Image 1 (tube, rainbow, N blue to C red):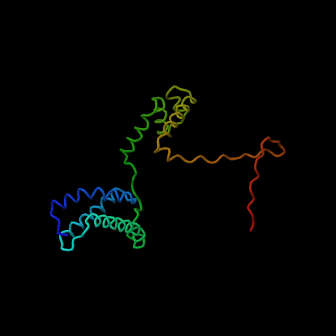
Image 2: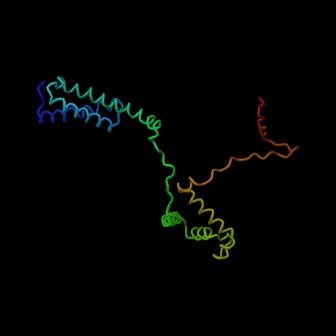
Image 3: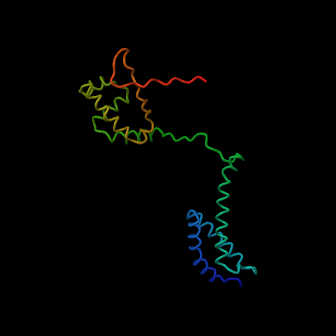
Length: 198
């Protein structure tokens, strides 16, 4: 086959490139992988088409080349991680400093407190400053019970924030309190399992 002219190469690329991408996607490649392999196949064909031994069947050649490029790249990716681990090239950062600066922390706290009512905000600010419920009640002219309720409601709202929820300690499992000796109970408490001695 005689070498292709530039116009012929452009027309061939426009006709075959979308087909190659579709074929590779059908072979379970991502779109990015398919486009990369198709471009490599087209570039390889463009170089070969200028030589005397240009492929006789251009469409079949680029299809086979694109599939080969895709398979080789997948194989390289599969082998890359074990090779990097063996060679010690893969370095995991020992510590990432993602803590907030003092100014950012203040902004974050202000944004959280903005979700609360005015009374809840006042109570929580005073608690953060180290005041007790009794002292807050005296300062605000409210009952200690009222202050505790504002504090509880405010905490419940703040716990809904994902950043705070992830920091909250997990609730310990419910403990079974055994009934006093000699007392009859309507529900049977399961006996603790004894460890088997081997």
